[in-house]
Amino acid sequence: MVNQEQKTMRKTMAAPCDIFEEGGTIVLRLDMPGVAKNGLSVHVENDELQISGKREAAGTASGRYLVREIPDRDYYQAYTLDSTIDRNKIEAELARGRLVVTLSIKESEKPRKIEVLAKD
Image (cartoon, rainbow, N blue to C red; front, side, top):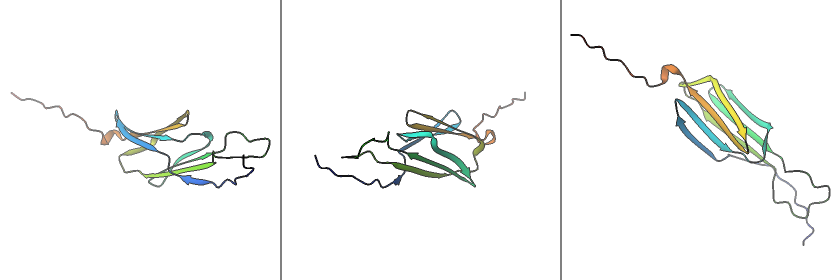
């Protein structure tokens, strides 16, 4: 085995993301393996939803690395929010490396059925 220490270089990348509409909400599902709640930031600034996460290597070896292939990694993504999104009703949940952000659509923007009145 080669006795070689690798220096970590932090890389920032976009987390893989699925976006779908479900029951009057828009859901973003991002894979961010290794990111803990305290390494995560979800916030809205102006009309932009910004999501960032920091993954630290799982545990620190007490000795010297011979091979280090699991990198520290930063995630960052930003999404422009249009006027249909209720900024006060954005929710985020992190479980098992997956971040789910739920964006509520304003009630005034949701489709609604218009009742037709009949006059005889």
